View (cartoon, rainbow, N blue to C red):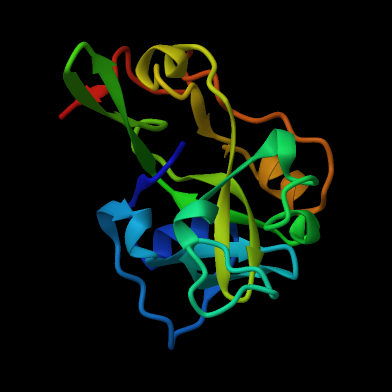
Length: 195
């Protein structure tokens, strides 16, 4: 699953890449370590207005949730079960993209955990997501390629989108070719950066 990512780019970089603008009243805080368990506000674009970058909190809160809702359980949503899970099934048409330039996963080797920085040469891309009430979840899929080796315990990874067509298609509920084969040039370097 995906619980840590980075978004280190400027507002100008985001606006240029995603062809959208951010409200000047929003305060974007770029960070090299965004931790989902802190439910931070991060930049997303929703299908209601793809020309606007908004800051939503990570950890989807359904309309029917009470005040003590545990957002830890809705940081991620499996693409295979979106239409089945109570927390997500009413929001499958509330599409968003989460704006990132990398994410982190840990590889287990015996008792050791090795942290990997994964992305596309530090270039902006997006995760597929769903949103509700100014909150969102990251959609995940089965780990493929090098991600099976890195995230070798749960075998999951974020449903990643790289091109303008990918972004548009996800937001418009059209077929999407997710960018997840990090073993090819999509990763941008021959080996992930180890921390």
